Length: 200
Ligand SMILES: Nc1nc2c(c(=O)[nH]1)N[C@H]1C(S)=C(S)[C@@H](COP(=O)(O)O)O[C@H]1N2
Ligand SMILES: [Mo]
Image 1 (spheres, rainbow, N blue to C red):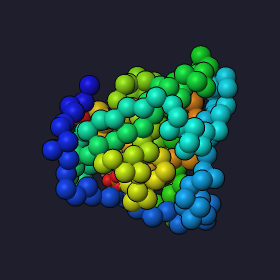
Image 2 (cartoon, rainbow, N blue to C red):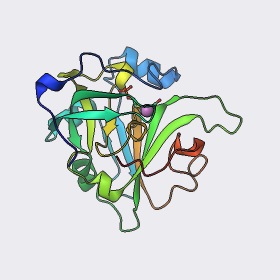
Image 3 (tube, protein in one colour):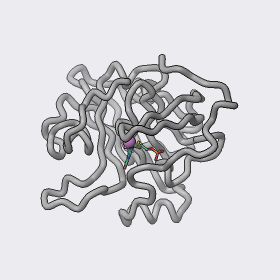
């Protein structure tokens, strides 16, 4: 387990990093509607593909944790996060036996590229996906997740570096291989040289 902290340890300021206000028109429309029409798509190598609203996610059992976020750039902040354990959603969807990774596809484009690989995405292995502290967070510091931190839903993978924790999640897919996604190294920053396994 990653260390957890008491409420008094929560950082007064938590730095928003990377994308902080996605411009994708579909995302902008959902944000303007207070994310009422947003739905998390769960698909790929699953028995029961699903679409879950924020209300659906909030109705599932939740986990709250106060943890330290470490960015590869060299800064850290402690925050409270609440959400649904990823394992709960994956168990509901039912992974097919070929599934080896979970991919997260995000609403934001960090870089305009010739080959359209600027969209943020991430992948984690099944051990991290089913870890008890791996949650799909809709709350931060006891408030609904703000846009700067990935509203309406972002991943927390507490034993890894910040870039694994995809913000603005639109779709989750169970996959057998990430070689065919984008530039093939398992994440936006991995495609630009960072390690796929970002364990702390
Ligand atoms: N979709 C998306 N997720 C992302 C990023 C991003 O730019 N876009 N940046 C990553 C990086 S490098 C870090 S450190 C954290 C920052 O989370 P924060 O904005 O809540 O501090 O989000 C990660 N997840
Ligand atoms: Mo980061």
